[in-house]
Image (cartoon, rainbow, N blue to C red; front, top):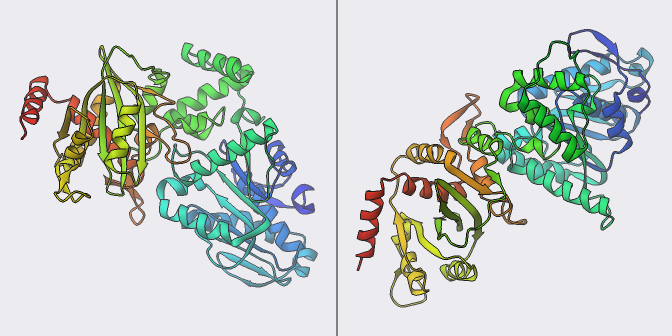
Length: 495
């Protein structure tokens, strides 16, 4: 990597001025710790896209028959990446090198060199074999274009032969989607390697995290910068919990930057890798409410209170996934102690799940379609409610259907400020589900790619199941008590 590492490339700064490129500390750290497959979670503006793309250009120039590819989140960004990080650096190379390594073909997205190597930029890369691949802002792709993110995973990543190089880099975009799942897998492998219980193979991603405070440029003269009590508590928590000791200049920079970024600060400039995923996903319906719940300490350890009854709220998903929230009303608080979700199981499975827990149950709230008849192994058709009753599940109630989805969404927004969530019980269910909290965090507007805006309708995906079950709670609990009592009496009178 002589031209990347020894200052032989000329680039342009953010201010539009030319400079000779030398890798910064973060870039050198990535280079020295690189693996075959690399996942990079990072704060903004540390130059990783530039550095990785220069590595790809370097490899194409000095090695024959190398196919190098860069995937961007949008066509506009793909064009910018090619123009600024591929074509411009190539045009600034010493004349002798450009003559020796002329392009046989070039257009607005690809350079093909006379040694058989090529470097192309686009929004996808399916087909053929790639030796070096850079996926830029995979988190944003996962958030706005989940189908494209899946295509990249199944297409582009599978086009890279074993033992070649992949760099996936992004800021975080919520707890869900392909980038989040890839990060969780890489982080789990990282912890196992650190503990000495496993070794990375050529098929495992190495996890790299680059916090804002590791960059020397993120500092400011602290004179005259007021630091609030809340910020001082945050800086103290970083010190006590994570051993992160910030200088006065770093604290001043963070305070001023946070005032600009608002709710996006932890996503764009995370102090820890866990923090990066705590912020609201773009286009999320309940993003602000979940962020507020975390800030107010309503997401954490919420123990079961044995003296209080437990209610359940269900969704019988159209994709054969059933979701159940376990709820307790304690004083004025709605406490969610557990979430359960699984696909491909019958009512007998869920009856056993209820019976295996030591809870004293109040009522079980199922969606309206639980009253639809199903053909079972018996000669007569039964509804799901009747099947559960036959399996000794009592006090079942069907929640009326909401005709307008927006009413259900508004009900959730109105009830969330009263809710407390056990982060473990309502969190990730092994490898089978991101969990109920993640479903609420990732319940999102559909993205209109043509108009480049969020549609006023929810995206139907894995997050719909847990959210629909929670809507059943919101609809039920926001009804006037007299209406709930009347509905309970009418359901008990059902023949």
